[in-house]
Image (tube, rainbow, N blue to C red; front, side, top):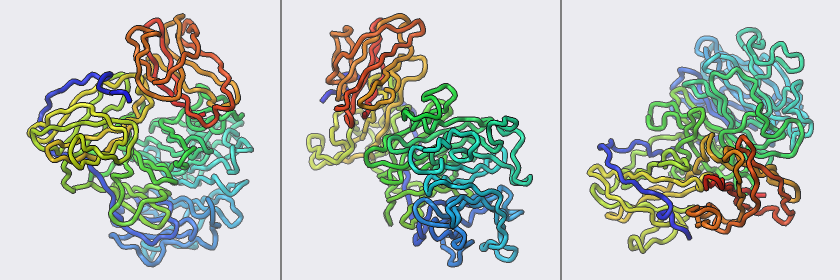
Length: 604
């Protein structure tokens, strides 16, 4: 076990008094008893009601002032098929719903095809829709029963309706529909519902005979829960993968459309080896985040950027989850850099009920965020006002090769705080720190002990080496006076920024065939040595360069190649079939500058 202490520079700093923390959050169950709910939303300006979509019953129900109304808002059961990934899948209220009463639904009919229709609220009761007001504005034939998408959403910037369609199902998109510009499946579409459901004239492919005019973006597999940031119109897309990677993609609010998100030649950041587009081509839009789905996690559920007023410190935080495990994460994205990435699962575990299979997040008229559980429960994210003895904030900015800040609040004033770190979350005894103490890091190391100020705040700066890029680091703070532990944070350290020496994704990462290993921004025409092994961990590599710290504890030299005039270096390597299922750790070293790249763990 190696010591972070020996490779990280700790700089203790003095800070001004900080107000007591208001960042701790939790969930409360606001309603239960729904049948397979999969969405929640509210009309603009309606602060008393939340509308819940039930997939298989094809009903929309209302939570009004905290009470579930006994009569559904609308019942489409006779029209909508159900089972598997079919049923009532989407709901969006017109931005001027308060005046025109229009709302829009996405459901699969009894033939299994997608129907997009407009309805209107009844003239006599605002809690009941007119079931005879249906106007079907489009129907899409579905070749298979899965990957229907289903999301509908109005952009806060242009007021147009966006609808999101999966690739039509089966596996690996057998018809290459997501990349076929003459097929609506596997696309994001934009229409003007106030002008006869027409195509806006500034849609990106208007006038291009090879592409359908309604297409806004293409190359999605099964966008499952998509949202616009109500502040700036940024679009966040949770796109379910084939079985290896789950992804969150992003589109700026000022986009003119035309993005290609890469399915089926890419799944997240990985190449699939399938035809239809060119992996990592410049015209493809790579997700801002993806994660492995070959183990317990299996299906991303996209969420929302928090823009409510009840928890000001959460402003700009995006929440998303995995359907299968119920794990919840959050991060902030400024258009180029991700910060404050952390897992929130334990923090958001409710006191009543259980969050198991997250089918959706929801947003009410006030911008507060809800979690929809398939078991029939609805939870709301709220501020945790329970007095906390000690709370650990996320590592900021959680980026390798620069100084990061770790901060704990609520400690004993002027008392000692010990920071722990490791790679594995898990409860273990830590009697050596305090008798009877249980900590939340199974492979914990002591990082540093600092003294809290008079307000109970303990803060220090830590330099995170470049070799930690891509690794998940678990942190916890211990109040040594009271022998109590803080919450545990689990954050993935961001990779180096463009312009730095960086090891690219191992492509395609498949055993039994040729793979490409490459680097960017090496010393032009200089030598680059590639290292490999099975264990991430910092060790001395003086035999390569004096003073070099490599990020692979059992490293082997793979090959040395010469970079071209642009500082790019690559080579092809055949990966034996016997490596299938193994995780190989890779790193490169710029010999001219004795600079290590980021570390890439790759499961083959």
